[in-house]
Length: 448
Image (tube, rainbow, N blue to C red; front, side, top):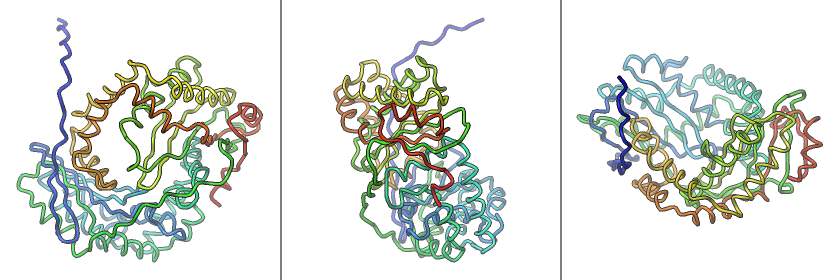
């Protein structure tokens, strides 16, 4: 017998848990106690991301981050040691942060965190392990670059910036080849082992001594030295412009449109993310409805802001047939101009509010997701009530707010379009599209 569907009630208000913060030696512990959350997440955040790397050793942060997984004994010894406690290693490098950590049962948190401390403070970093990891990154770089969308995404930085942002986060292959084991050990000693960092701990913390955890992880390391963000310089060349990464005989094109954006601290995130949602951040967004539903050119189109400590990027991406590439570009530009000139509808405003507020209890229902939010706050120096401020900002959005955001944050006249596809069939139609001069590049020569 079918039951009657329950009626939807009003969304319940959500408040992000207030973290506990304490200073331990040269570092800081930021923790959220979630009673009953039996699986805990621990993250150690260092401010030594890709943007802080020396120009002569680009990619050293990513290589060091991967090499830590070889543990104190080398040869991938960390994973099996963690498995004995039901724990999992977590690590990544962003432009602004060097993040390591473990996910573990709360009742094995102390043991798993001790292994994290060993891996971060005193890894083996043997020559053979570092060289193996470096070879893996290089092989993976070109393997991933064989995917057109990845190729276009990696190439866009060189069209927008000079300096470190012009090169992919993992480093240019030719530069990375010169990063030797001693360079990794030097970077680790100065930027990781010698800096306490911030320890994020989330889970059922009953009986957990946070000060003891912090002391174990930080050891005798000192405090991080703050640096002032420096805005990256722009890449030379006329704007707007189109760059084709030649993939002969390709039947599809990966289309990526991008322009520079302000730094994370300079952006009103509810307005910026809201207008991005209207344009391409939701299934009902304008780009998706135009390119997918009306024209039938793609399975999906989207856009987003990639905001960093000292600069950012606005990105639109899709994949289309070669014959429809030029029209997909002009149709996307037309949607941007329509949004800038006409603003948003009440339906779009309501969708933006709901998509960024109603689901918050689910979004932050796990220790891992709560830890991820705390990591973002640490990396960007955000207040502890950042999520609550975001929620309030989205709830207070008006159509006028999003209309002004479209004018402020969407700049089609500064757009660089990178297309991975068959240049022979694309160059003519793209030249006629009026989106700027067209240049053809050999993908294999991009980072040589």
